[in-house]
Length: 161
Length: 161
DNA sequence: GAATTAATACTCGGATATACACTGTCCGAGTTCATCGGG
DNA sequence: CCCGATGAACTCGGACAGTGTATATCCGAGTATTAATTC
Image (cartoon, rainbow over all chains, first blue to last red; front, side, top):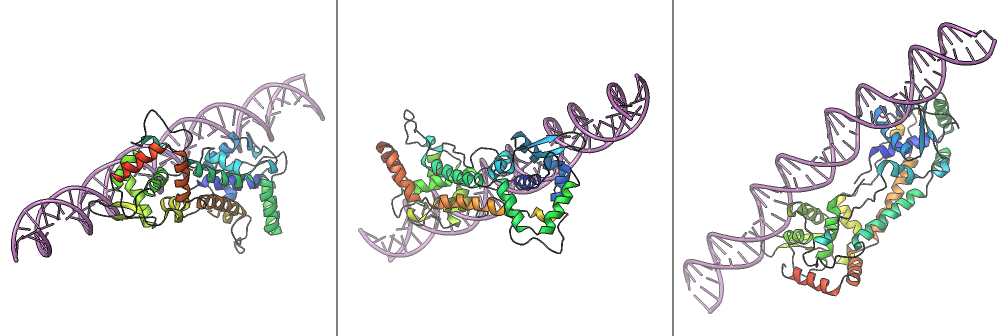
């Protein structure tokens, strides 16, 4: 089991978009160049974010993407689920119904014990992702990144909005 | 992102093997028939469990698999990692190094903030799986399953060990 | 009748094809901006 | 000089191939059982 690389790209793009001046748009072309990833493929991740209402895009010159909500209102979970889907990590195929000892007249009731454990773990994973917002990430980066690098990125972004 | 169906099969097989009388072996053929899954493919999951030291197999007639450790000493995480691998769910490709603003002379130090959050969530998921053992699962099943079904399964298993 | 030996049948283990999904790419529809012409 | 219409360029959005992993399968190596044979 491995998260697709789109998730990583989407998170990094969200972090950059959180630093875009209000009312401006940053094109996917710039985001792809910034992260060194293929532009055409990155678009798909951004489209997924747009469908989920996390970012919004505008066409034409000076178009691009921007966050659709304040960074504090967007969690890691929102971004991950936008790309990976909201389905649980564990899919119960109900193989217990194939049990030759069980009587077909009395099908098992309620989710099976194994699936419950797996789903609880899945929920713990999601809860941890839901607890961190893009605003939190921005604060962490502001504290860790060298000042000159931060300014350089801000200028680079400003040149392309 | 989706766990492979081998994980579900491995967990169900572990649950059944936990109910096998001590010193006896249950063949993969019986486990496959019990769960209604292809026998040849299920073998691969059991081989993974054997490599991880969770179960052990014996050849010849009356051969098969049995747990290599007490059910209380085997957690869900052990089974899941045996099949899925111990690698983290999130793979950081270090795309921040492609940042055109960063100076190649000063590469970023330490894991990036995004990867840290993802890894923490991954750890929360694993912690939840590590907290449940096969003995716990057995206790839950003993409390939930109808007595007649439990006896029927025990007899079915006993006939094939 | 008991022990030894050989054959047998059954098991696991790894090597081998196929299907699906992720990865990567391309082109068209739509919109905004800039330019040009007219009032 | 101001307004409107027109053209162009740039953007996003969805449709189209390539590759890698998970799925499914088969056959060979090895062992405990079983039966036959010999003492």
